[in-house]
Length: 401
Image (cartoon, rainbow, N blue to C red; front, top):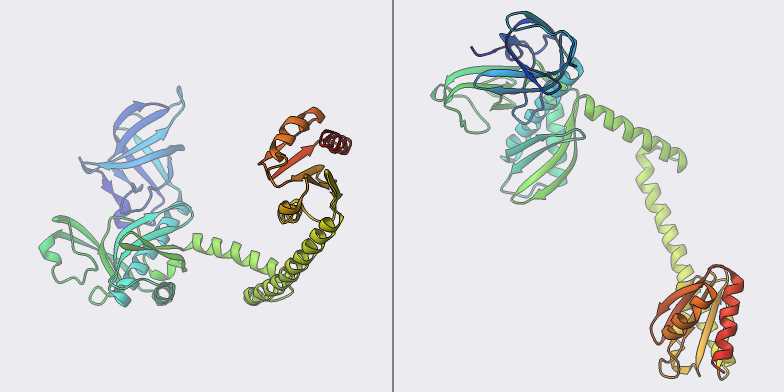
């Protein structure tokens, strides 16, 4: 006997007694069916309900051949009713209502895309952080189009339109109903209409749970729109989850407003202005650094002597010191060593013919607890102490005399 689906005619019922019609022990609990249930299984892109049977947590709900199967977690040895006995059902209302808000919100937004752009929803997913619909549209769905659909959807919510379910026995009986999508079922069809069925904001076959009036959805917020293969994926949410996310975002915007001494709605312009100033500073710093690099190259070149030439610069980072040395390789008599004491590093440069910088580092640095490498023209050596670094440089001087 098929389970009586109370949730289809009364989505607001949160408690119920029901007779157990079958009971099967499974791992960590029981799998059972009831003569009636208030728990909706997964379906239509919507996740299952949550709740309790005789105070035991329901871990899964699914439908098969008209029966609704409930899996409950029951520790071994605890009492549970037997087949034919009565069980007490308690629905997790927060989960149910959130599902109703979100699923109805999906109908409203899908209807908006259809009404505004003739875009057809080809896929729906209800995730923990957001929902998605995949819209088939002849014209590319832009962000502005998505925002217009969002605005249209929220107007539907504010009108507090009725949401009704039409039970249709056969597909041909639905020929005069203005459906958003063609029916695929042949019989026992449930059609959800948002607003007047004669001129609805949305009308489509669906087996999920929905609110009674659109005002209960509260809010719809679109997060992102992007191309997804041949369709356009819209990321959004509705109801309590949308509100909670927007509340977090606004709290962050308030904090940023305090940080930037402006109102939240002016933060973007304030950040852009700050970035322009910072970019100007970076440009000046870059030009100044390039001037310093050229001055240092002139200084080194004018002081260059035969053998090993050692210079110490602690006011520039390693990458800038590398630029100094790389610009001098053609005029280096033998080896140029630039020391950066803060990094405990020695940078070696040569023309690659009179000396092999990589070989010098590989052969000598490990002797003084250093490591590094590079190529013939340039190499780096790093040390654990400044004494080791200076001893390494002294050893190079003696070796290259």
